[in-house]
Length: 315
Image 1 (cartoon, rainbow, N blue to C red):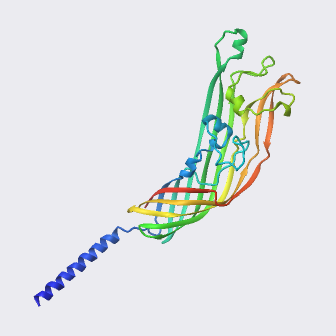
Image 2 (image 1 turned 45 degrees about the vertical axis):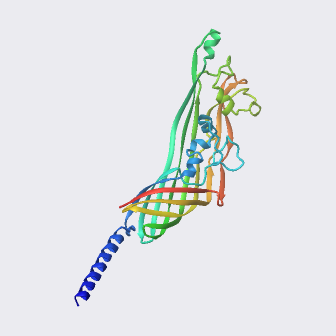
Image 3 (image 1 turned 135 degrees about the vertical axis):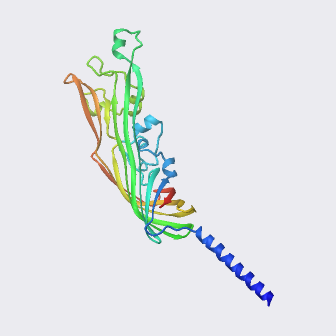
């Protein structure tokens, strides 16, 4: 009888300890409650590997940074494009927000952008000082001023299955934009006596595409403003699939593969303004070289792919 009591007490203690252990184990399992929110940071290594900023998509951006990005441009386009095309993918870094509407469904939105202003300057010989004194070492400065911007916004639904380590997937809309403008300033002015002044060598070789045959009243021209960076806009559909792991309560890290199967994009009117000496009117004039009245294109297929690594905190 005593043995039975001992066995019974031992069994009850074992069950009690097992229940407590199970309770403790279950306490470590976390799934967001309905109505909870999360703030997170996303990183897209594919966008980082392909250039990142909108400046890399323009000929001037390539000139300033010494890169020749091609992955963000329509296939078979020139390495220094007259029009700037955007890649159908999320930005390199973005901030996201989640709202758990149902047990296995959440609304998700993200926003990411980049931009900057660069004033690139170099010294060149002072033509006027040299004309007065061939031994002069005086110099003036030329400048390339690049104002660029780009980014993307997404909004959609995310579905999940599991607990601590759970599968996630979703779809939604993505809006992207990229571009800016470029302005030039020169230390040597164009005059009747100096119709082809000394200019930063890289501008004449890498950026200046003025053709005198297209404007016979100017034998030489140099750019003063370029809109060939253009501000492009695009809207498309994205889908993603991956995992989210809660390594502690309220905090998770995740990784998804993102695909943009279709995107429609719009490129505005693009042009370059040149300045030169008008040999017929005898004065300095400007010539507007029209590049494009505007373009529309559609990207579709499975090539527009990205990887999204994220960290979220729920509250």
